[in-house]
Length: 288
Image 1 (cartoon, rainbow, N blue to C red):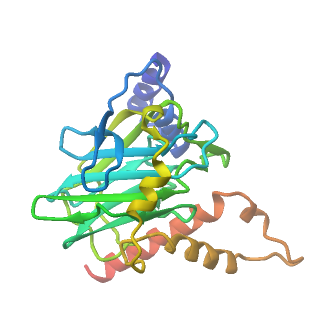
Image 2 (image 1 turned 60 degrees about the horizontal axis):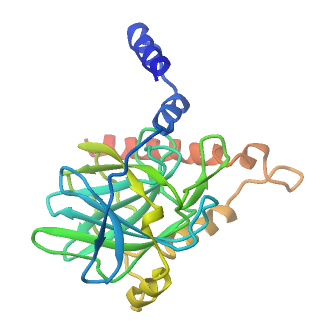
């Protein structure tokens, strides 16, 4: 800890640039021992029992896991995010930092809600997370005072970290998460791909995932699955469709194999992110 403080102080003193990798490593460094911040709650509308954390701003994050969720990851998660209606968007970082881990960002859309799977490869606008999905369940709506999103998160307990290695969410442990929110509404509340402003507030907490496990998980999913056709607020099939499109346009080298840079899991994503930024800057200039 002391060495981190000295490194940060030195960087400030000499105005040395701090890389994304350095920021990522500092943000995701484990702190031990840690005390849990989540408490058991039950949602009356869905009957689901969660371990829930509520921030000082009144944004709550509830998680429910299957009974066999463990250190190897690979399991689904029920997530419920509730926020005051004046919160433009709220999000959770599943790896405890903004970059190189899955994000779930939610907002109100009239009397309905949107759940957007996101990820970021730098400190700029997160893009759609194509390795996971958020499927809206019953208990998702908005009214005059609050909005509530209940979703089945698939692909959120295992992901690729900064170095291209597999990272797992230990469902048998106490785990540190991060949240962010903004009071500024998203640019297009009807679209799961909407852009949105930088956060007004960020924070971290420790969630007791072991206590969030339940033998009733599968029953809760079955009882609360929405049978209507997917809407813009349901990101279930969206990620898979986008991933197929990306695979179809993957560039090939002369011998018919994927070009070397494409083999690294982060290079094409970083390149696409840079293109996204360039397009957005061009649009902003055109509308100035």
